[in-house]
Image (cartoon, rainbow over all chains, first blue to last red; front, side):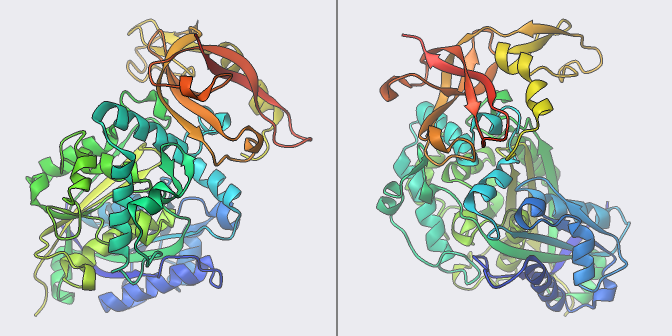
Length: 390
Length: 134
């Protein structure tokens, strides 16, 4: 397997883009990534696009070909990747494998979702498809409800509190205020979260990531070539992915994502890194409890200590480990198919020292953690900056 | 899905009306819903029909305030992960109880109820819910 690096990244503002279409968003991110990499479109040999539910959100399938066409990249092979909310991360992994294998030298990765064209009811249904239709959605389960079941159990087993859950949201909103691409640019308090009304107890509205439009893109390149054409490539040090049962009830534990633990173990074994070697992590905080589970399952904190660690400020920007410096899914927004790619865009910016006011000091290794459904797909990547052309 | 086609509902009658699952005679594990192969033994496994017990306990629960289509009139309602007495877990609504009795560890038993009704034209779906046993 060959080493692979990111040589360019692009992202749109995340938010409610009433005036802009799916196509405009994905083209904007793609063009920005190409400009950032300083290469021509004709140098791209293949394209991988993450998108979860365009059929339900905009009535459009066949997104792979659509993106290539809209970017003027025909006739290169262009493939849509779907893994629910992990679509972007899995698209990145497939692009990474395509370059690592030697099949291509330069490929583009896109992630996009346009979620505001439909009512909240339809959006809820589209997202619900990430769960088990026959045993969860059929019986009235929503995504907040599935994560609420995990939250309640975590509170029961480890004494995690609703205040601690709220603190995840407060921190991520605070970080988002430092990120010009983030959907929310307003700090919130623990009281705001606690008073925001139950969606599915114990989760309240401000424990949930929002409905978002947005796109993100990356250019991947074989590392020897990357060193010749890019001043500061960011190497994909490792990639791992794991699967678990679609239905939450079929898992042994409700207080961990087994797929996260398995993929994380593979990452640490492959790289020889330990959790404490990671400077920052973009983790999948689709709900506040999800961030608490993630920081435990990734080994940053002991199982059961995620809530307390958050309360003590150990996950704040430039503390023990900066968790979700971008604002995460909660603060930056969660255009589901774009999220996994956007996490890697953040890692790229952070490791190049280009993250502005939210810059993590002395960042060496950055980790991204992207989850599909209630934990049925997990994909993790680790990145570091390397020397390029002078 | 917004509108269930009739075969999709009809096909699930044995599972949703009677908790019909299956069991692998090779490893002894029970499955609900039933599976085509035992994920533990794969092709070495041998699955036979097994009706699940109708009693269990609550492992976790949530009160849902924001409902998907077809459940608007039920709001708020309780959903729980239930562990049946044979160890198999499933997700179901908890009904017919005062709120303060819905707790982790509470004993429950299956009841047969209407699950959802999307609109006048679509078929009404029935299936299992659970209630607390005093």
